[in-house]
Each structure stands twice: as C-alpha cells, then as structure tokens.
Image (cartoon, rainbow, N blue to C red; front, side, top):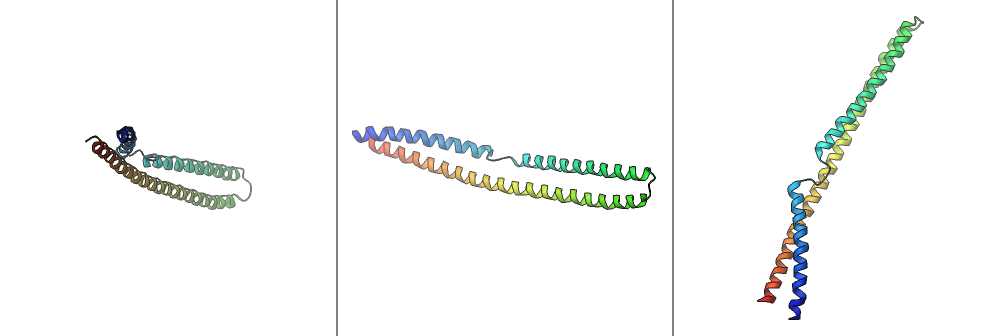
Amino acid sequence: MSDVLLTLPLAAGTLAVCGWVCARSAARLADNGLDYPPLLLRGDEIREGQRVRAEGLRRRGELLEAAEAKVLSGAPGAGEAVARLDSDLALLDGEVEDRLAEVAAATAAARDRAEAGRRLARGMDIALVAASTAAALVALVAVLLLVL
C-alpha cells in the first residue's frame, strides 16, 4: 500500500512534467520559430546594402562637387582634376563593391549559424518529445502494475 502512495504522486508528477515538455517541444516543432527567421536576415542584408550604397553615393557627390569646383574656378590643372576624379570614382566603386561582398558574406554566415541552431533545436525537441512520451508510458505502466 505504501508503494502505491509513493508511486502514484510520483507517476502523476512525471506525467505532468512529461506532458508539459512534450507539448512545448511539439509546439516549437510545429511552429518552426526556433531562431531568427531567415527572411529577417535577408531584410537586414538589404538594409545594410542600401546603407553602403547611400554612403557611396554621398561620397561620390562630394568628389563630383570638389572636381566641379576645381574645373569651374578656372584654375590651372582642370584636366588633372578630372583624371583624378576618374581614378577616385573607380576606387570608390571598388570599395562599395567590396563592402557589399562583405555584407553578403556576413549574411550567409549568419544564415548558416541560424540553420545550425535550428537543426540542433529541432533535434533536441524531437529527443524531448520521444523521452517525454517514453517516460509517460513508463509511469503509466508502473501505475497500472501497482493498481492491478
């Protein structure tokens, strides 16, 4: 009789905990909301790319204004200013492209990390659902063996 009094609350507690863990894990598996969504990562990449391009355009405007002022001032060396402008613009375009490539690489790395985290979380949730179900079945069998 004392075995039943000890086992029944233990089994009920086990069933409650296993049911809660199983329900939470199953909900996460069904929801797939396990990590920062990849769509948001793509949005971050687009925003950062736009910021890089805007900075490049701002710097391009400054270079053009400086060269225009030099040419319109009539000072000697206007041809040299235009040649320097061409090389500065080419250098700026290269910097912008390099920075955009860095942004794309960082986003790809973040996407890979997110996928690895999702795989791990998915595996853990599957293991928790299986373990919770097994523990609940063991608790039910123990109660049935004691009661019958």
